Image (cartoon, rainbow, N blue to C red; front, top):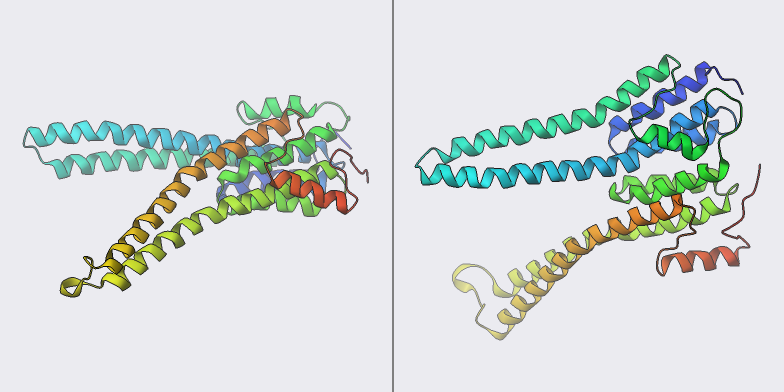
Length: 310
């Protein structure tokens, strides 16, 4: 290992950072780069892990910031529209102006998210040790990474960082499953801790991603039953016993869909908490899922706490 990054090191670093532009699916590349370059290049490994953190933990922060900004703008728009209506002004034009403001804010937030990885990629192409604001230096301390010496970065913290980012990526619908899946496939045989965390995270994310589809199917089922039973227009049979029953089914399906919509963010929060626990060194287990995965691994002769060296 040398302190000067090679061309291969810089290529992996550049590609890992630029993959953030893909908004979701790009999260696959930093894990592949880290798995390929670990114990070959501290520089490439660190940059790949940093990019992984930006696309999971950083993406979570960006999503929350976007929601807060949009919510604040909408709340500010409501009284402005009300005042315009009270003063007999053109409400449509007021709403149009606020929509332009919201569009500009969205464009600015997207540009903010994309700009940092582009800067990182350019810096790495020049062989520089780029650090994301706040994230970069914290990760360097967590991994015991020092660009000036030849000591390998902390392996246990490497695995915990990847496992933690798998938990954090639950907020990335569908594509977030690529993190635990890829980590399990590429490094599961070496690190049983990473294997356990990756498998339980994959199962957990699959369950969380399934919930919105259940909500949609539930709502469509209730609506379909209601339409089939009551019919349309003058032939509507809403006043009949079957019509009332179909109305109950419709409201029930709507309540189920609404309940799922409320619960899903709580599952996202649990995923964030799980990532935090893993990064702090805890052996986190999801309720029910963790015990099930642990039992299956025990049956296959694996142990969550041990690590196999290559």
